[in-house]
Structures are given as C-alpha cells and as structure tokens.
Image 1 (cartoon, rainbow, N blue to C red):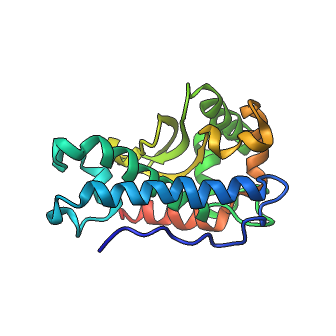
Image 2 (cartoon, rainbow, N blue to C red):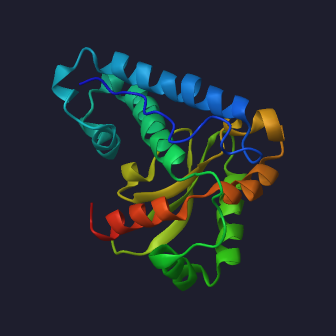
Length: 206
C-alpha cells in the first residue's frame, strides 16, 4: 500500500486569522504532498518495507537500507509530523488545556503559562527548520524538546504527544521572520481534545 496524503480535517481558511488560507493550502497540498510522494518513490525498490507504517519506519531507521535511509528519515518524518499537525489544530480551538493533559502539564511544569513559555522558547531557539514538541518518555513523564528538520521523537524512543512546526513554510507568508509571534498565536488553534487522545494513547503504551 502506498502512503497517502490525508485530507485536512477542516477547510483551508478555517484557522484564520491565526494561520492564513494560502499558507494552509501550500503547506498541506505542496509540502506534505511532496513528503508523501518522495517517501513512496524511495520505497519503490524495497517492497519488503511496503507493509510498514510511516511511524514504524521512523521508529527504527537502522532497519531501513542505507541507500534510502536519509530519504525515509526526511520524508517519512515529514509525513508523520504533518499528519499529526493537522489533527492537533481546529477552528475555535485554544484556551487552557483540560483533562489528563492539563494535569500532566501542571505536574511537570507548574502552570500552563510556564509550560507555554518553555515550549515557545524551544521553538524560537530551534536553529533553522524543525519542530518544538511535548514528548512522552518511557517512564510516563513528559518533556519539552525540539528536533531539527523533520525528525520525530519516535526515533529517540519517545512519544510525540504534540508538536508545532517551525519550518518557515509554516508561518512565513503571514508572520515573515517573526517566529516568536507565530508561536504565541498558534495556541489559539490548538485542539486539546485530540491532544488528550494522543496523551491517552501514550499512557496506554501504544
């Protein structure tokens, strides 16, 4: 089965005015679409990998033939990251976290504001392109981290509870070089219901 580009779960303009329609269209159709296309092209020579999910490929890159490992790392990573990214945003999102993820944030970081500051700082300080994450550790705890390019916490044995894309293609049309402004505004479209779903999957060991 070839990997497929998932449809956006809302209209391209649905996250206005936090994320503009043109950015969403280019980001989903062109950038994410290219990761899927390039991943499928890289895997063509290796039908034995056809049954693996993109997550499985990222989780064990050493099992991927060296000839295509860099392409799989970049493009399977981009596919996994963006598939998550669309789901953890929604129209009329934002606000304070609720449920188990709120408890985890308060227990680990003291307050939601302190967590936001640490998360945003990770995004600001990620040099070049990459992601800021809240990741789950094998012991059940959570941590803020960043990764370069399209790397995913799965490759480090961690669980990507949620992340924000700090590649320039995610924000440059609206925010230009003002990455901190984008990071601050992004919380207005966060989908805490989906993030709680992902946190529950992490806690269940999935």
